[in-house]
Amino acid sequence: MVSVTDVMAAHGHEQVVFVADAASGLRAVIAVHSTALGPSLGGIRFWRYETEADAVADALRLSEAMTLKASAAGLDQGGGKAVVLVDDPDVPRSVELLHALGRTIDELGGRYLAAEDVGATTRDMDVIDDVTPWVTGVSSDRGGSGDPSPVTALGVLAAMRATLVELDGTRDLAGRVVAVQGTGHVGSVLTAFLVDAGASVILADVNEARAREVAAAHGAAVVGAHEILEQECDVLAPCALGRAVNDRNLATLQCRAICGAANNQLVGDVVDELLAERGILYAPDFVANAGGIINIAEEFTGYSRAIALERVQQIEATTKRVFEVARERGLPPGRAAIALARERIEREGAGRRWQPGTPTAWTGGAPLRELRPGSPRPRDRALGSQ
Image 1 (cartoon, rainbow, N blue to C red):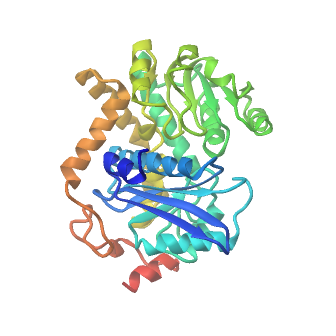
Image 2 (image 1 turned 180 degrees about the horizontal axis):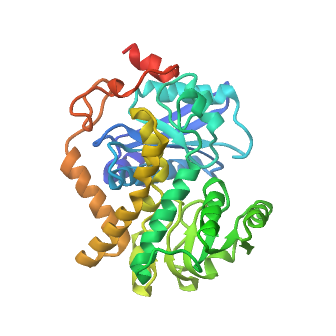
Image 3 (image 1 turned 90 degrees about the vertical axis):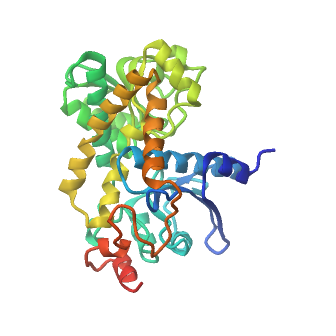
């Protein structure tokens, strides 16, 4: 049997924390993959897992993807992830559970910066913010950026334009057919953006009522959740949970490209190669969906929506660069993106591990607390007391 530490060593994880609080019912896993470029940043996922082993595997996989995402996006952060085992992700979490989770995050001293992920809300982040400064995505009245989903969708749209340029030499979405899998926070906003840009959109979600509601609001078509991957379209946009495309369903795809918001969209590296062999262009998920992390990273330098949106638009150029490197090196796009991300980590972060109170790689030696402008937020009071 492969142990957790075996997997950690093989994939370069620095730390895994198991959390349990009997009083609140909290059961969670926090994985810190890398702090070579800076503190690890990643969302809290509230999800129903069949086993604790499944939760650990998800935390390890997602935290590693966050490291690649931050590096490819040019951020001075590493990758982390928290997963919380719940019976129903749609049931609001108690204040007691969120405070217990926040206390554990606080004990990590900034090595892990929490954010929103599947099942999480801005309200959750605000409650966690009551007990730790190391949380992002809090509401604007607390000095944060709020829900990152619209900005994530904007980044996917930018990556999709780069994908169309690679396919046809034009970034115009008018007249294109896009199949969106998942109509949650990001998928619904992406649908609105696509329709506004003139695209025809096909939707599906395991929550059929939600899919119909989003479709009615934007004039999109709806198909069953089991049918969406088989739709004839220009772009397939996975925006639900990961592992949507595998070697079994790949043959049924009728898209020309894949570009969406979900993490870990492909099951295994071999699918990246198989897609290339089939002539289906893949915009690597951790490049396309980096808008959210770019947005919340701005909170740690004094949040500016205008600057965040400007940086998110650079995802288009990053995606184009990935396609260029893929051609130059004879690699499928996913492997090219991973190579670029790892090369930056090796170049700028070799031998580093960020610790609270140490100089940061991205400020020329200024401590992290000096990056935070004054505000009434608990995090700023905590940082000012260090």
